[in-house]
Amino acid sequence: MTATIVALASGRPPSAIAVIRVSGPAAHGAIATLAGPLPPPRRLSLRPLHDPTKGILLDTALVAIFPGPATASGEDLGELHLHGGPAVVTGVLAALTALPDVRLAEPGEFTRRAFANGRMDLAQVEGLADLVAAETASQRSQALALAGGALTRLAEGWRERCLAVLAEAEAALDFAEDEADVAERLDEAAREQLVAMASELAGLLADSNRAARIRDGLTIAVTGPPNVGKSSLVNALSMRDVAIVTAIPGTTRDALEVPLDLGGVAAVLIDTAGLRETEDPVEALGIARARDRAAAADLVITVATPDEVPTASSDGLLVVNKIDLGEPDVLPAGAIAVSVVTGAGLKTLRNWLVDWAQAATRPGEPALLAHARHRAAFAEAEAALLAAAEAPEPVLRAEWLRAAAHAFGRIAGRVGVDDVLDRIFSRFCIGK
Image (cartoon, rainbow, N blue to C red; front, side, top):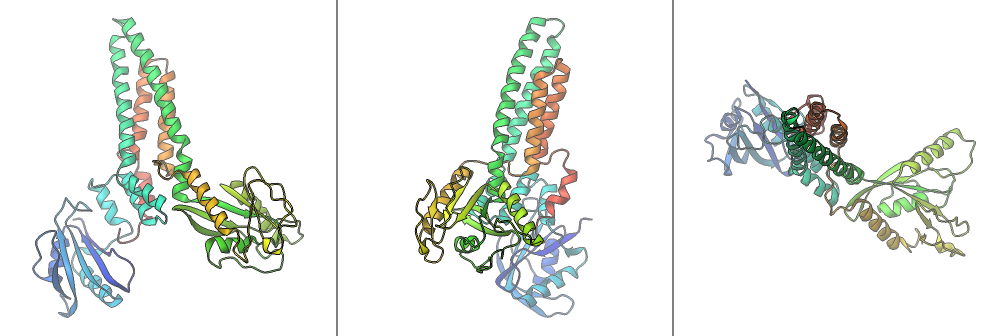
């Protein structure tokens, strides 16, 4: 018999309200044991909750029940809306799990049951995990699209196109002997269609880096010589004292990462070690790491002072700091002059970064291939379609088309995803 699971579905106590969710065949009976007569389905009713073994009052709560399978988990489900004190939550959970066949849920188990019962597909599950982790508006929009089934519909549309061409390929087999001219025309039409489909997929895959940047955040490395104010600039942009600032050269030894919200786009600001020649092995290691991070970053901000202004780099942004001590003789085109001390130029710099982030991610446009699993499936399908277009025989073409359709089927979790299920559901909290 399937166990009934229970967990706190809201934030960690103390809180004003706590929500405990119960799902499984004994869910309604377990709630009735504590709350007495149950309210009608899908209606909140106020009930006293008693510990059935001790007979003591645990709390007065709002109770709701939801009959399966039309529930979030696809099973009978119930919710208790309690006062959010730690003692209340602990007491109610203890009373519920003391009942037969009721236990605490494992991480992601509610969502896993929803997947197993057909209430969500795997891409929607991944979207829900992204939604829980979303910190910016663009991440939220992307996660909502994925959780709402946008990628599933896209993959299913591609799968249907593959199956349609597969049907034509199998029809060509029927004509192969008796009507060779018909078979040849079908063969040529299929090749052209497959090449066009592969080209469309290549465009989607080329845009997948943008989707990954929205989900994971843009990376901005702040580099330059020691004592030009890199750490002070990081603190000013993040509006927090996260980096240590001293007058001693080489204070920053390792890369420090600071999250940043650039007009709804997630970014990570990386404060790196000052670039200079040094005999200190620890500082030298920090400088090597700084160069590596700069090479991999989406944007490099090079910080300088007015007395030592380099030529602006074409692939980054030059920021001249400490203009409160004097203006630079020449400010290179595209450079931004600021003073972390007085705040001069910082608004211009923030606006520049917001515009850059918007241009890099185009958050208003759909970007669905944010997960490596999704990109791999679409890349596999593209390769299969190209192989099908080049196949010398209709039989081989049909096999490659089946492989492409299989790859698209993995997006929703219909086929071949057993090896990734545990990894995906482990990302969820207990109450999900």
